Length: 625
Image (cartoon, rainbow, N blue to C red; front, top):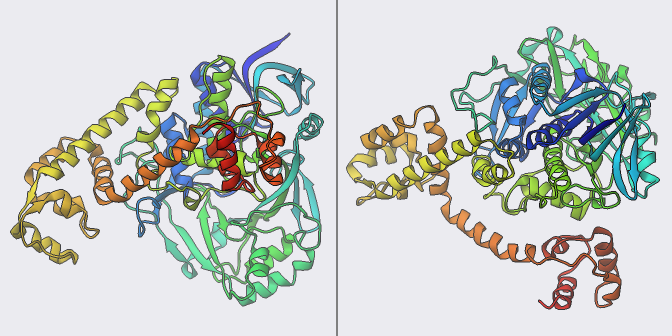
């Protein structure tokens, strides 16, 4: 019996789920292979989606026709919009989710997509002929053939977990590691390395004294992650998180165990995450800090299990529990399992094109932690882009990539394939030079039409986006035409601490003031109230979209001009067959880096570490530009 597919996706984590869904919805026949079908889209670490810059990625996935936003809305048990004290470029949605509901909803979603088949097994060999992938072989000695293969293997490649001196082989607690793929790929010339991440203990909420902790509730107004949902969507029961702090007594207890920490006794040599350090790393890196913040977050709508954010650790289990018992509120705590560190193989992403296809083997794609990234959101984004391009290539259609001024997803992938990684890569707003263009509120306007043309974003998504643009522009037109008289608005302006009007001005000028929002002045303008009433349940969404453009139009226009200037470099294509070693005017480092990475455009070449502006000038002269 022979099994043949268009696309095989190896791994059913966040990257694999978005990849399988995207390829299948585009029309490819897909096989999704996973070690455990009960762990599809498992939230291995924190059961949360979104956060700073990550929330923007979830919104972009949704705008493109992905499912992460829809499933987050269905499983969220607390919602917060972060950074509201800053400008809209920094606003980032975050949702605490019910991890069981999240996984179940993903499986239900995938099972409803007709083009997806499932197989529970472990892949240990990638089959290649003439530098072109032809399929995979599994641990059960079964061969599946495919036109393309997407590897989304997470932390499972030669995964090794550490709890003090105890070592457990596996890709996640109580789950086996995956063997064979790394050795297979390195034999083909790929360069692999090791990374490390970790997770904190899980806690029995019945044993926590919540009266000693500070409750942290979510926002009253929940803005859905999916553009298909409106602001009045029905959500699961919302639950509070809780904040606590370590102190010097806790720190002293942890320090006593450092000699038994695999991070500090030489056992773990791999690269760990800078931005999500273990508790022992915090004490070593910041010895002068007398306390560290902890977040106690529920794992589900009804469960007693809690996740202790900020207490990731690979210390011996006894040290972890003894130290936690010294934290106020946790004196009598019981735990379900200790924290652990995990080491795993990854492949340097400079070995990929912007499509996430490997340079060594045609039609083989990498997505997620195999590329040195961390985070569910970053993984899902890579899975979708890899799947879109796998489908397009086997159907002989042009590739699909996103520029840095189009999406955080574009920034993510460009950073990976151009700069590479020397630590687990995590997205931040600071990584995006055009972040005021890449806001969480306008991902649909930026991306849905592009995806609709591919056949991925549905007609419903496209029409919803067009309707939003129409209503937003209708509001902008009203603001530009509506005159405001001092006697009507001055009492509101005075109450809000804004300077009063001396003469009549247009409403859009009033709304440029940071203290004034549309909702503050609706009652003054009956025509505006009537217009908004006609918008129904989505009126607040249209208000928010229009208001951002009014208040920040100057900044947005300046950034667009800058993006247009830099885009000229992105449009200058570098010939595939250029031999950089022949260009002796280039620096030695530039010749080496350009030969290795093979940038497709002058813009990409300019972002490679070690390639100077003078090197770019040499390339432009060589190309007659």
